[in-house]
Amino acid sequence: QVQLVESGGGLVKPGGSLRLSCAASGFTFSDYYMSWIRQAPGKGLECVSYISTSGTTIHYADSVKGRFTISRDNAKNSLYLQMNNLRAEDTAVYYCARVGGRWELEHWGQGTLVTVSS
Amino acid sequence: EIVLTQSPGTLSLSPGERATLSCRASQSVSSSYLAWYQHKPGQAPRLLIYGASSRATGIPDRFSGSGSGTDFTLTISRLEPEDFAVYYCQQYGSSPPYTFGQGTKLEIK
Image (cartoon, rainbow over all chains, first blue to last red):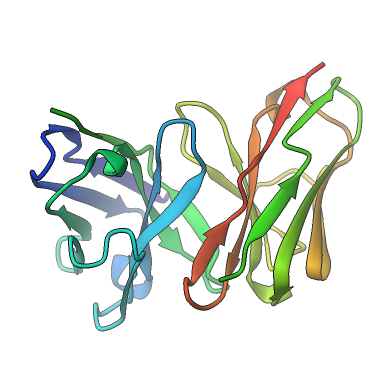
């Protein structure tokens, strides 16, 4: 069955960096677009970034553009999110998700918590 | 930017009742790219409906989606105890490509 397992979250000071990983299994990873979605405490869902199968098409939310970098390693069935210059407003649970044929987010991981605080 | 507005913000119902959740878009949305999700605390969100009306794999038939243009509806025909959660609609378009509604909390009355 499809499994997505995020890791790499934690507590970081403002201005710091973190790298999130998402390990995928149970499907042919290289066949699917992938996405990072976040949910800040008490808030709704926000698409942070998505990446095409080969990595040639990438989108970022305006709120993270220039600070976050999405990437993937199809040989390792892994998705990554490098987060630099973190701000308090980046505090959230970060989910990775598999993108379906109609751009629906058809499978999600359990999420990893990122807390940005001094 | 397309804004999705969900109503009501909170819906209080009893098991066995029918739930009707609304998602209204600020501009016309392609039905192909409208989805609904269920989210319970501490769990991964779960895809319920895609393409406005197609049930995702494994989703019970008490869940149904309908609508077009700017008005979409998620209906739960007869509520089970496990259905109480927060529900989000989501559309894929352009600039930004993904937007979510603010959510409807379905709580036990």
